[in-house]
Structure formats: C-alpha cells, structure tokens
Picture: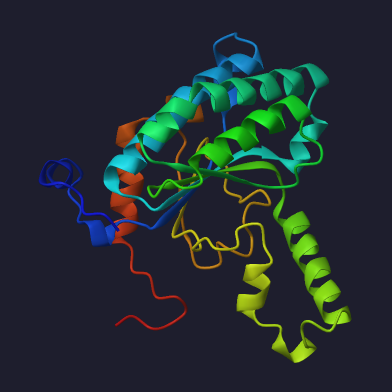
Amino acid sequence: MPAISEQDGESLGLESRQLPRHIAIIMDGNGRWASRRGFPRIEGHRQGVNSVRTVVEESTRLGIEQLTLYCLSSENWKRPALELNLLMQLLKKFVIGEREEIMRQNIRFTTIGRRTDLPQDVLIEVDKTINESQENSGMQLCLALNYGSRSEIVDAVQSIVSEVEQGNLKKEEITEEVISAHLYTAGMVDPDLVIRTAGEMRVSNFLLWQISYAELWVTETYWPDFAVSDFWQALRDFAARDRRFGGLKG
C-alpha cells in the first residue's frame, strides 16, 4: 500500500499499515436527509454525490487500495418509477462528469452487479469509463449497481455447476477460493471495513460472502452529511480494533 505522507499521517494520526486495504460503504439516508428538509428524495441523492467525491478523494489520498460503494441494490427497483429514472440519469451524469477526475487521480473504475436491468445509455457511459481507466494503477473504485449478494452467490453456484458438468472442474475441487473466483468481486481482496450511514444495523444483502471477517462501523449521520471527519473517525476506530479472525487474542 502506498505510504501516507508525513502531513497526512499527522492529520489522521495513523500509519499506512493501520489502514484497511478495502473499504465498502452502504450509503444510506439520502431520502431521509431530503425529507427532513422538505426536499424531493432525488435531492438527497444529488447531495450524496458530493459525499462520494469526498470519500473517493480522501481514500485516494490515503492510499486505500479498493473502495466499493453500494449505489443501487437489486431491491431498489421497487421504488417509484420517477425516482428510479432520476437515479439513472444522476448515475449517468456522475460517470460522465467524473471521468476526467478518475483519470487524473489514476483510479481504476469497475462495477459489480447484474447489468441487464440498467438502461442502455447508462451502460454505454459506464463501460466507457471502465475501458478508459482499466490500465490505471491507483485505487480501484467499484460501484455496486443492481447488486444483490444472494443473486451474486446464485450466479456463482450456477457457473461452478456448469464447469463441473462440462468436466472442467471436479466436485471435490470446489473450495472457498474457487467460489470467491466466481463472484462478481473476483480478483478483489475482501473488505476489511464496512461503513454504513444513517444508523441502520443491518448489511442489506451487501457482499455477504466477502464481509465474513470485516469490521462494521455504523454512524447516525446521513450520507449527504458524511464528511472527512466522519471518514477519519471510522478509520481510527478500525485501527483500534483487535482483529482476530476467529482466533484468540495474541
């Protein structure tokens, strides 16, 4: 992991080795933020984009290797059509508008999730950013779009069964590593830290396999209000925890 500069270390109070390699964030509370202010829900999503920029920039500055943001769950399609349409246009605008900054910061842009339900015009812009940034060597920014962990596991199982049926894989060769290699997140390290905003104490079908040993950090702050100070607090709390991975304290 890239070292934190002396100035960065002084401000955050942590060393590079104390930071998570992979941070996953459940960005919750956009709608409630808007409702409390008498705004339409989409305004909460618009304001939430500013928090995305803040966290991406700070993660890049600190040398975080991977950042996964839960943008759209497979269950979110139950929301009103107008809100969904506005969300899709906001996503498209973000991907286009941030493309230059993604390249400037040497970020590799990727996505996970089932792409089939996403509008074609959105997919075109998403793929353009993926393709243009694929050779970048900095932080990997992964957006979870139309993502559900149970669906991901089903897709992985079906893929493994197909390989067994074709004779490319033996039943006894199926290991945790094989399963991980068939998930949408293949090639990524498992998250060390999961951040959830807006105070809900659940993981909402997000990276169920991958977060088996992740540290969870929940704040009452709504996502549009999530600031660098909140992010730093999550990182400091993470650094102070004793991660035993099922073993005894050393």
